[in-house]
Image (tube, rainbow, N blue to C red):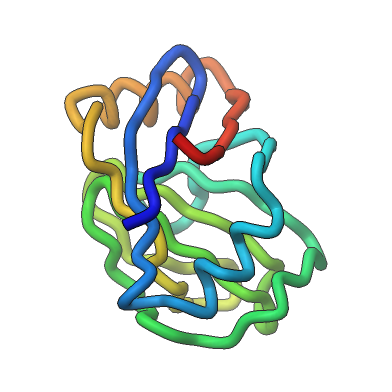
Length: 137
């Protein structure tokens, strides 16, 4: 199991890469660590924060994909109908864009700090973009 540390806004989360469920996605993402971006609140999906990544290409296809990530699950959309993006669910989510429902690869699951997820989501909603760093623990 590969352990990950995620610092988002003032919160720190521990997580694991889902290497058995999404091996190609995890392998591709590891090449970008430490991954630094900004999270903003989702527009259409529900209770989540996301990182819009434009035409960034991780070189992945669908694996272990879902439109309904559970709180604490992180999915990556490889691009196509909408731009490439990473989404972290903090509550109920139906992953979507202005083009309609999407599906992303579930490749990271938070293992600690879940009690701070809603606070992170509300912070991004009411205070705006927050820094995020995803790195090996």
